Image (tube, rainbow, N blue to C red; front, side):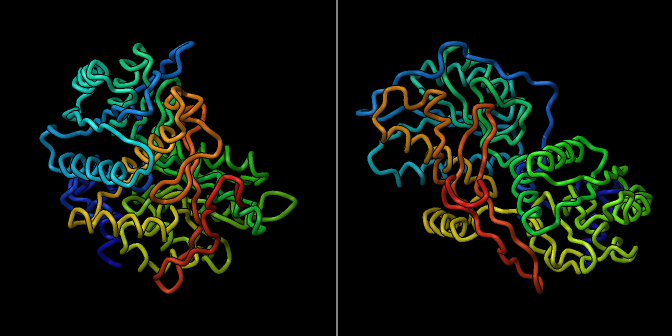
Length: 415
């Protein structure tokens, strides 16, 4: 526990950031793991491109459907090589499990470069690709989308950045908005709808705060106080009096019953959950809610301050099943975001099985019933983002306990 707090303090003070451990495997590049928290790699303003009247190519479902998989192999970074291999393995595993659909999977290396991504996207479409699966990073996905839009082809990117979503680009990565909606809806149902929002003054923190505020409006919660903080150890300490004041009242209806933290374990979460109880705001007095995964890395579960907190995660049982199948096939666990490639192939396969020539059009990809992925049901939305069926979990005695299961369909609870 001390080591985890120490690492968080180093991250907040800007020291030793190059050695901050990755959530699962230290050897992997931090950039490659950006989606696991979920954190947001905010690119410079990337505008999605509409394909106008064309919403996707026609396909022949009686023949194998060509699908281009774009992976970050060749960048020279070991983390990208590991990620690329896992994405390809997961995609091939998904293709092998399809019933009634055949996929001709073709893999292209982007070298982690937007320029190379644009070139291989053009090559893939020249080779006959009917849909682009990948790439990972936001700027590369935007580059692929721009090339593919001119050819009437849709892109299912592994990014979680909503700024690049829209037009012909769909993001498969888990979004802050999806998580915030799920947790806020659950909190209101539990009588915990009066929220103090605490967020860092970073692009990720501000994006998370925006998602929580939108979720509150959608789900009839009240954000009765918002406390931004400088991303530093002193910034956290300076914010504590404001959090205490916001949580204590300020409205005729009384004080807050929940504190919504956008911080992750690599940042301010360990320090906040240590210091809030010392300032009279323990989890026995007010509900902690986390926008990020509090089970990653596993050492987070040992922190006394996170006990009893709420966070969201994909269906643990289905995720474990996928991990077991992947490990049996390839001899090692998948990369934390490798499952996104499986999801993409599963969605494409489900659409191809329908036998429609326009299965990979925008209307097909955004079918309301969605698809079954490695962590549960998900669907692509017309704005290019996604909605995933998430479970709500808490931490009891250093163990993850699901307190509201993930729905198995979009007709189920929570939607």
